[in-house]
Every structure is written in C-alpha cells, then in structure tokens.
Image (tube, rainbow, N blue to C red; front, side, top):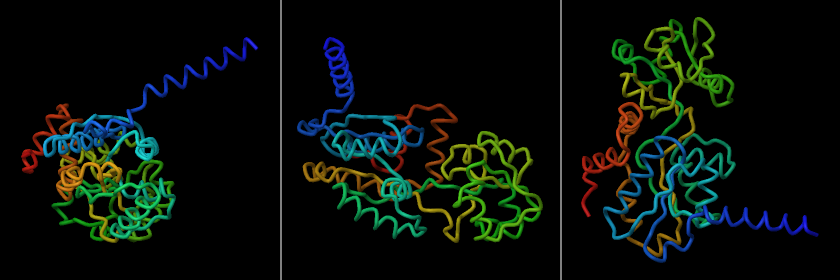
Length: 302
C-alpha cells in the first residue's frame, strides 16, 4: 500500500510539472495572443514576423513560444488551444498531418488544406506569405549565367556533362532523385555522388560537383551566389509558408485576421534566403532583422 501511495504521488507530481510547462489556454481573455514557431532558424524569423505584425498593427499583446517543436507538436498545441497561431508549410500539413497523398498543384493543396483544417480542427489557413521551402536543385551562379539556365528543363541538356551531388535521403526517397530524373530526363555521365548535406555547397563551389539538391530557402544560397533552378514541371510538392490560426481566436479578435492578412505575398523565396543568411551567416538578432524587413516593406505603421 505504501509503494502504491508513493507511485500515485510521483504520477501526480509529473502531471503538475507538465501542466506548469503548458501555455495558459485562457490567456486570450486579457488580449494576449500566443504565437509559436518550430525549431529551426527560418521559423524563428517567421514566428517573430507574425508576433511583430500583430503587436504593431493591433492593441493585442503577443506571448512568444519559439522553438516549440516540430509540426506535430505545434499542431497538437494549436488544436488543444495552448497556442493561437504558427507558420506551417502546406505540403507538410497536407501529407504529414492529414496523411494525404502528394498533390503537385499548390492551389489544389491550399484549398483542400483550408477546407479540411476548418472542418476537422476549427483552424484557419490564411494566405501564403509568398514563398515555399521545398527541395531545390541548385547550381553555381556563374554556370546559370554562362548557359542562361533558369529552369530544370533547360538544365537537362547540360546534365550529361555535369556531376551530381545529393544527400542520401534525396537519392532514396520516391519523390527524390529517381522521379525527378524521369520527369526531366536528367542524364549524368556517372551516377550522382551520395554526399553529406553539410558538404554539398562546398563541393559545388570547389567544382567537385555541378548540381546539388538543397532546400529552396537555405541562407547559403544567397550568401554564396548560387542559383535555384525553377521546378517548371512542378515535380516537387508545394510547401508554401502559411499562417495557421485558431478560428475561435479570430472571432474573438477580428483585428487579428486583418493584421495577419497584410503579410500575404510579402516574402519571396529570395528574400527568405536573405533573411536566413542575416541570422545564420551574419549572426544578426532575429528581432532586429524582422524589424528592418517590416520597415522596408511598409508594414511598421500602426
């Protein structure tokens, strides 16, 4: 009996600790909006952008929850009412949260996602910020200029003379290299090299390889003068950055929807790369970077 009581006390103590770490679900009663972000640099920037936009254009106060976790953690938190908003990527939500098969048309994905999130979770999918973060085929800037290459279709005629360098995951995934090569008829003189992702840009600059697969908003792309080839046949799923907000919160504070809607289409992929580089490459403070960006975009007026 004594051991049982000790066990119960321990369980009770753990529950208290977990509860104390959770955001206050009732915080909206006093005009505070809880904004979360996932656990990487780009999300630090986007979460701060959302927070500053709300604070600068409304009388609402924002509680920041940076680095809350991955998609599933943020989704669980927002559906439980523990946070009010965060930025997600459409392809991640569509395939990861809704468990749907990949669709390549970004408009179809957005509409299906918007409808499903409203019906299943009472969440609002707001318009895209203007960019997506997806797989990207990247070449040296000098090659893009020399051969006037902007798209993957244009690059296909040069790949027989090129060397490819890709990460293990990209080489193995069904929606990775094999499907891409088939879609664009990409042919290489030798099989692409399996490379550590931390080395692909260095290898590209040192001309050990001529084309690599990275992420479309990597800060190093801007910093190193590299070029992302346009996926003109829309092989990769869309991963548009969209704000997700609780409908209950939007109904309570109508000004919130107006404030967030002003961010629609404001960030291009190139601008996101530059912002990532300012934080990761030049070690600038996230709040300062966001503040300047908002000022440059004319978003800092209340």
